[in-house]
Image (tube, rainbow, N blue to C red; front, side, top):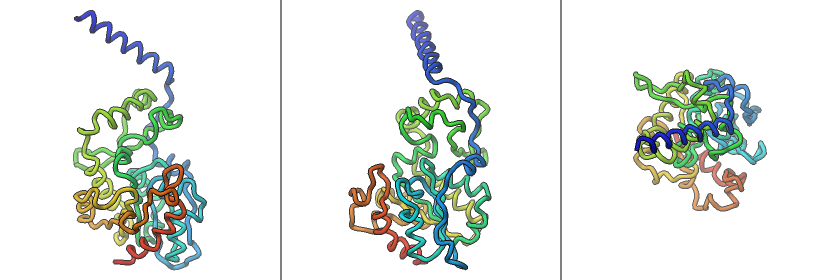
Length: 290
């Protein structure tokens, strides 16, 4: 029995060594918000010609950024045109709520936030996108993410039960492409039913985003625009979010149209220009219902 166990251990070690040869070590660092703000290409703001008007700042992933769309086709641009106000698009493909928190914490957006009446977080499907709070999105063997120079950002609760950015002294281990792939598999497939509840984690992060925004502008209103799921899918979560003073707008509840149709859903699974043309008037109406 011991001999078989030893053989198994040796075999595992050999396999791991082979993987480390296939996926060579890279000089990995803890996530840096300064680096993120410098290298990420955000869309230009819309409607800056509308002087002396309160603005809106939008956060989110590629849905908010408008992947596959021209500048004038995005949610931000169409909302700006419809409401005749400045709108700042801070969406970034592959990002999630923690990226929005970090943008606010950088204080590079303070002037925008101070002049904004609303901050909108465009929330895509909770499952599986909720895992983005912990691991990078995309395929396991994505040519980009496993080799990223910086660890994927995630927040963890500290001893005071407050969210803080996770850092590690073991970047050589946790930054290895093999480690990242196995960790992603472990979180998404093996531990998915025992990890902190995704819904609760989303609630904690949205509450954190709201508090960070209000530290800069106490009067700003955080609105969650739920795109892929209906409000009725997660009634407990959304009632808890609203109990914190965060308004929720469910895109699917604003229209009888099927947002999954090709007219509204692009080849890469993101909202089309037509989707935003359909939704923006109703979204603007919801925002104006103070």
